[in-house]
Length: 163
Image (tube, rainbow, N blue to C red):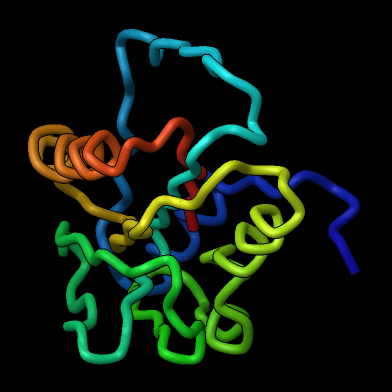
């Protein structure tokens, strides 16, 4: 049954970190607003990328392993979802392990493609483990790497799935 009240994700994250005996999470504060970029063409013509912070990896890849792991996994968008796994320290992975689409909506994107609602899927989805303490590493290493992959794959719009 869906919640009747909004979920306070900031408090929920604070509670999770406390329960794990981690130091309080240091929230990033962006001084400047993110630049808005409207779509340049209709969604049914767009190439869509998937970027997820849920610690998703494919069998054969190295699992994410510690709270400040800022590495990236590339997963082919034609992967058999039975080959996907999660490794993350900061959320209950039960639902994700039962249905990976709860944190990595690859099958819904495939359905959108089959229905003609999107023009194409990027060749690879990008995953990492959220909860990275080093904002500097995210800003200087992870985010530019993600951006580079999306540009090289000619992605028009990215679905960003935080967990």
